[in-house]
Image (cartoon, rainbow, N blue to C red; front, top):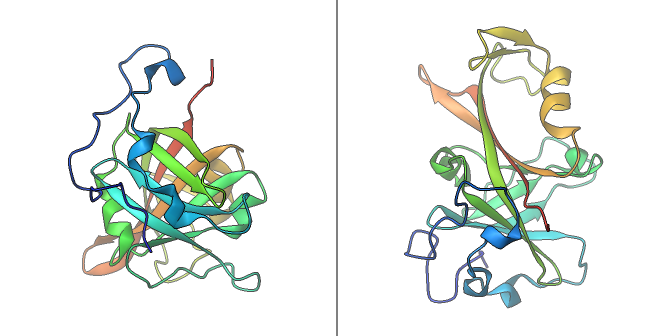
Length: 199
């Protein structure tokens, strides 16, 4: 089952964006978490990410990568795949094909709240802080080098890109391919969300 808001789809009306431009903390959260029917995502392991919700943008199940397949991305609609290697650094990497759930990643914007749902029903809020775009020099190679389209065309290796987005600890990173010039894997989109402070 996919993440859903009780009585709402991801695109339906729900509480407005919680961030009012002040210091970012939970006092700026308007009560919206009750809209998410977390009972649908409860699993045996409370540490496992089972869903992700962004108001009026997306509501997705989260599948886990097989231990022996670090490039696996689910083909199932309504699903993102948690990037196992990123989890080693405390980062929640969410991968999806741009022909499937990844198409919704392009509708994400700075300031939107991202709710991560865990197997015990716990919801942890993050806020989108940055969106980045890269061109892949060899689009079909998962270990290709990249051109940073947001920073004057700087060249980066796949290792450098991984380090920049996935080795910085507690954050959520949405990743999908950019379709351009007739190539569905021409580039990569990264959307970064950071934790909402409890202060």
